[in-house]
Image (tube, rainbow, N blue to C red; front, side, top):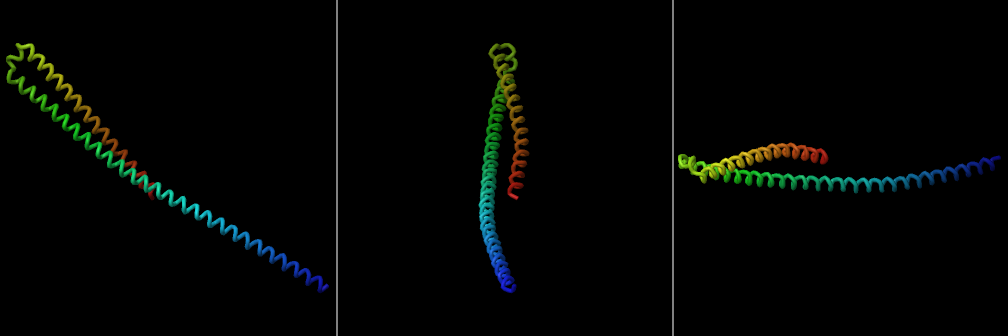
Length: 155
């Protein structure tokens, strides 16, 4: 009977050793898997950081381009407007000196129509510039929303 107990103890010890070895191998395998997952996670976090940096840089480039285009619109609009005002002023000045003859002369009537036509074009350009300015104000708000989204993504 003692021999039987001794064999049972040996069998139990052997089973316990095998279970401990299996548990150790399982833990070791899980640790390797965990390390692999952590490495994948690190790579993805690095990739996300790179994408955010690229988005931030692109947003800065876009904002600079928008500002350049606005300046060009402003300069072009102002110079066109000034030229139109000069033409209208010049035509009005020339017509006011010869106002008595303008009523009698057909060529002066054509000049008057031209002056009226220029004034209408000038008014039309003024309205177009106002619409562009309103649209630019809307773009400012859109650019602010875009910048806010980018800052939220960076955080």
